[in-house]
Image 1 (cartoon, rainbow, N blue to C red):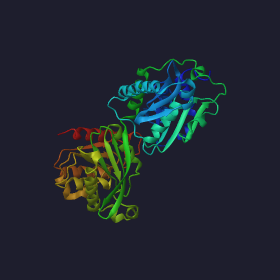
Image 2 (cartoon, rainbow, N blue to C red):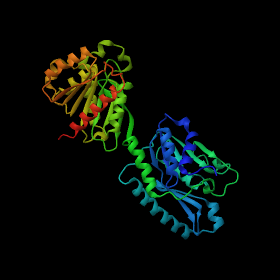
Image 3 (cartoon, helix red, strand yellow):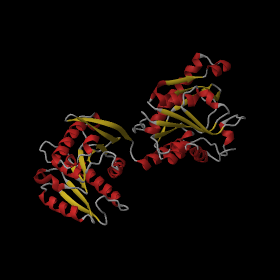
Length: 428
């Protein structure tokens, strides 16, 4: 025996998949037995876990012998050799298919409920089972995943018979197994504990993964046409999002800003969407005059807001601004427009003073967050707050400098922003 149980098998399998860590990976377990294995792989790769529903078509009176499989999306794979050798007729095959199709639909409802599946488009998908025997189920799973838009498929199992990859017909881009013994009768012979996995265990694995990673986030590139230039961005919207926050970067930084990305990830985990985008093109970013041109930056932010409001993913969702450094001035300048409908604004180490007289026109509740060791900016924020006529708050992160590089400082900013947006997005 190679494995004590499925958890042990998953841990051993994960060591063979270490090269996928840090990539845009989704791990799919085949219910039921493949899910506990897949859960260990997903944990090791820090990747989301979901299921790929496939039902084996067992030969009547020999249900362990697969004559084919069914998958989500109407995928159907038959093993003509097994059907021929066992003498299964069309009526018997149809009866098995009807029964297994009903089980497929029932399990989809049981395991997922109303929650959407993890999006696979353009991603590397690792399909995991507790072992592979005939290959029919794995073949159907790969076809299901390909039909859902996966860019690359890795089929990974703890154990499979020698030469098993030939059975897949190239449906997987990469195959991984811990063991491939020459003598192979059944998957269970390689496990000390191979008791049937209960539905409750499958659901528990999925729930633990979702709780650890937060909601499913749909992430996509954005190209925003404003005033004759194209601004690049990244739009991330969790399922069931409560609102979307547009980030106005400061001092020439871009959507790649590690500090703003860190804050955006916290917002995403809290169920808030984010749009990180460049207020300046690469050619413009080196021009210091443009970096401090608050009206220019605010105008582009306003146009990007209009673009976002017109996207189907934002329909009915409240919007907010998160501004850093000079980007905070742009956010407040844009928020002062009478037509601006943003619900809340957060400034991190911002320069709201650069918005000048526009501050008095801001209506959206505004949170100013400043490092306690950033004396000059703290003084400027105190003065700026006195000009605001909207609900406002100035919060000082003790011990933090301008860039909030101190341990725990940026995390505190993210928590403050999350609370502020969540509170005011829920206001009617």
